[in-house]
Amino acid sequence: MAKDPDRFFRLATGFVALLVIAIVAGIGVELYRQSQLSIQKFGFQFWLTDIWDPVAGEFGARPVIWGTLYSSILALLLSTPIALGIAIFLSELCPASLRQPLTFLTELLAAIPSIVYGLWGAFVLAPAVRTLQVHLPDALRKLPLFTGPPLGIGMLSAALILAVMVVPFSSSVAREVLKAVPPAQREGAYALGATRWEAIRAALFYARTGIVGAIMLGFGRALGETMAVTMVIGNAPRISWSLFAPQYTMAAVIANEFTEANENLHLSALIEIGLVLFVITMAVNVLSRMLIWSMDRQAKPRRKAALVPASPGEAA
Image (tube, rainbow, N blue to C red):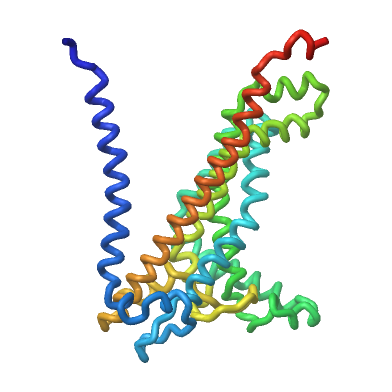
């Protein structure tokens, strides 16, 4: 009996897929194993305590969890309209002579090292944020969202620099998704008398699943960013709604304190911070995948209904 010529290929690709799962599982197991000392001492209170004091041996992750999520969500709110605008312009409206240079320049932003972004943020962005804060009306500066010392180093600077770093990732994926939309979608919209903007809206609706994936990819990128955020966020373990208050992120506290962690408990707490970041990242990816699946399930009945021809009685 002749052997299946594709069997080796299926086995090889299946092994690679299982290897990825094994690596992710191994990372989680090792982080959990190395953080046992902190887990045994603090338990679940580690996630809920506000004190981060290595000298006193008290460690609570809530301020850094707050800073990570707050900065990433702000960056997502700022970057998503810009990324989608870039993707729509490059795929739908840009002249052919400018499309390739603009695409190259947009993707070039992703190749800039994060330390360079951090230097730019410290010397250019932070002074601009400080100037903005100083010139705010006194009535606004009394609100909790705008309180804080006029340093330029704080949550807003971190969110702005994260937004700049997220834009090339989200816009590149969204642009490729829009390019993959069948031309029949746009042609059908034009045939029904749609304007150009209405045809673009139809393409966006068709590609909404991929666009959500692009946005979540940018969110994951923002969650794990380290050096650029460390240089502009202020590195103060406190919880605040203020855009100008210095705060902390999980990646930043690991980068700042890992080499100076002389006590086993301090080192274990930092590793548990890594475990928390790992869990949050996995949760975000699982939730985004569930959202995409739910959107696919809602779209399939509509696509099937559109493919079924009308009966003679209905046509009449």
